[in-house]
Each structure stands twice: as C-alpha cells, then as structure tokens.
Image 1 (cartoon, rainbow, N blue to C red):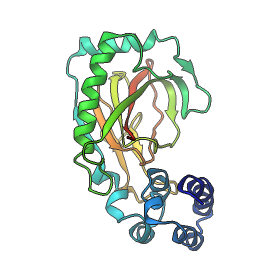
Image 2 (image 1 turned 90 degrees about the horizontal axis):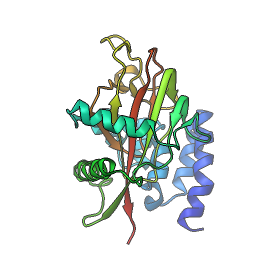
Image 3 (image 1 turned 90 degrees about the vertical axis):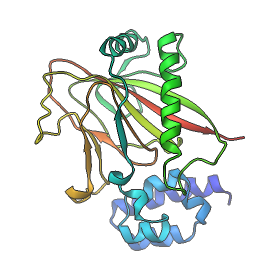
Image 4 (image 1 turned 135 degrees about the horizontal axis):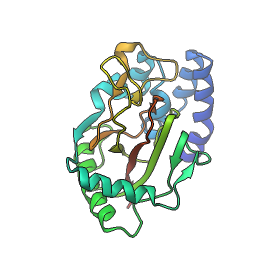
Length: 255
C-alpha cells in the first residue's frame, strides 16, 4: 500500500474514532502508519484533534498543535483606498456565489479562484502576499517548514459574509501555509473585548479548554497566517453590512 492509499484509508478511520472519543483505536491506526505518512499535513489536521499524549507520540510533539504558538498576524495594508479597490474587485467578480456548494461558507458568498483574474491590483497583491507567506513559512518549526529552495504558487478566493453568516470548521492541508486578509469589516459589528462575534476561531473538534483556544479579531488590513493543517472557523456576527475577506494558500510545487 502506497502513501496515497494509506492516507485515503486511514484518515477517515481515525476521524471516525475521534468522533467516538476512542483514543485506543486512534492509537492502533496511527501505529500502522510510517513517520512519513504521519508527517503529511492531511494527517496532521486529524492529529490536531487528538489528546496531547497522542500528539506527542505520533505527531512530532504538542507544540505543532497549539494555535497560540503558531498563528501569526500583522497589519498588512494600511491604505483604506487600496483596500476599497480590492473589495470592489471582489464584489464585481462573477464567481461570487451564495453559499457555494461543498465549501464551508454559510450565510454568505464565496468566489472561485480569484488570483488568476485579469487585475493589475490583484497581481500586485498576490506577489506581496506570496512574499509574506514564504517569510512566515520559513520561520515555522523545522518539521513543518518548507524544504529549502522550494518553489511556490499562491491560490486565493474571497468570502463575503452577511449578518449571521459564518464559516464551518475546516482546514487546507493541500497547502503549506494559509492566510486571511481582511478587506472590509463592518463598523457596527459588535467586537468589544468580551464579544467574539465575527472572529477567526481555532479550536479542536471536541472543544479545547478555553485557555487553549484562540480567537483573532478581524480588523481592516490585517493578515493572519497559520500552518494549513490547523482547523479553523468563524464565529457568526450581527451587522447591517458584509464582512469581506480574502483567503489564500501558499502551495509548495513539487519538483
């Protein structure tokens, strides 16, 4: 059985055992897999939901499964006029579809691939994002950072959430690093220190203790970056306007 066959067979089995909170069965399945297979991001996104002792035994250590230690954010764009132009580019995109099928968006719209569109501004933004994502990826722990000299491509799509909208828990294990750039955040969205409406939320499937979870407050121009295997979701919010963001993946090109 090759690597792809092993992942196709064991990933859903382990996910089902996690759903049943059957850690012994998880351990049995993981024991059958090689270190190479367990290091694949498609397995890491499953290992993220295991107890710490199993993460340490089968996933190269608990430090790779704590969002607080891995997620990075920065004020990436501070030009509101530039952000508005990108936002309008998104809103005019013909592929911006309500509750796009087989995607995690609920109560909002999501585009198809947007980075390949004929837009000089998006081309410039793509190049800037690629540079920033590569820099972040090269600063990750050794076992999950890209191989030196790797080549990359950037994929991106836009999400516009309406009041009550959110994104279901998901991950992007086909990539190395994922990011979210916030283009437009409603001024009437309740984002006080005690309210996590509209935030980007990292937790595990069964719910980590609150001190191990992480909420990121979205602000216009902020870029959030994280290893692509880390599951994430968004918290619903109330507003008269849409919450618009650009999601990106840094994909390592195999030579």
